[in-house]
Length: 286
Image: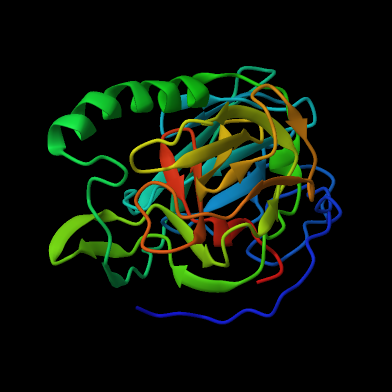
């Protein structure tokens, strides 16, 4: 398993990104006043998320044929699953009825293989117990993700929830005690149990599992708006309540080893709607 050492650094809110106003390639700041094409802040890659801006006069946006929310100033967000296709489409409907269509090539991700010494059943002692508990747990997770909240956290530059050794990377194929499992859906940061962590961006708490789930342990989910949410797994303690609004940099929980964990660490997972995405993609200070 590849591990990367990262020096401690205090998390602090970062300013919102500059307002783009025209189509641009990666790392370019658009300058034209008449936006005739889509603008993306980041290059599309499997497992990535990008803030984008629609052409001037856009009233609605379709991403791969599905309508997605659009702000009054023309911004929206799109995400590409770890296993997404190699292309995607954006279609804007303008006020005069015309359509602007743009195809996006999606680059493949680079996924690792990782061996993990952890019980596949997590906090359950038997397969029967796991099956009995897992259904209600998934129902709570799905209900939390289905909630619509008002937050502009998705527009912020995300900060690290805490700094530490990266012990697991997004997208890695996992082998549990010799048995293949699903790919790793988040970023693992190894730190001692009880270490506090903070909200990487503004949002609303949509799930706070005070009773530990089988796999996730004490699970905390923050919705950042526009379909983008963070999940923090294996916590030893949760310091916020469901429905609470949190601010970037606010302490929200403590690291633990509850659920399916081989040692104390924070698992940070992110989804945009149904797409699982890499939290590292949203961090500007890596």
